[in-house]
Image (cartoon, rainbow, N blue to C red; front, side, top):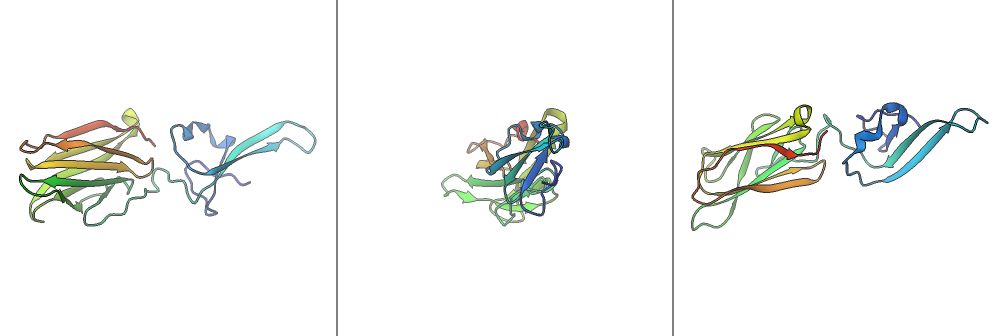
Length: 186
């Protein structure tokens, strides 16, 4: 089997990691649904000792930092941090039914949401890679509203969702500065 680094999706659709690529700690806390195979290479035709080993997974592509995520932006979805994080929200004004926010991307890490009119920004959101600081992705948001808001952020690579960002009805939207949001690095 050919060797590929741990930061590469082979064109063949499989994923291979050899011991010579580094430690297998890269896979700690990763969810990779696949059929895995262990392969061994011996030192010589009759030596009987293992010179190299590796793992191969039958997957379409393992997503790594820098290669993006599984988020697809649309009028109600922000895709942040190289499309890794999906951001959506619902809102509810007093006496009104629950509505779905509209999303507008600003940069690869930042976007905003509007509720009632496209000229009226309600919430600004960013998701940052803090992996080099505290091994986490960070979620920051600020709101210009006092309606009920439920902000949902999903890591589309690790399949982890946070919906615990709730602004109660009649309360000024308090800033979100969650530097412990996602322990899903890299």
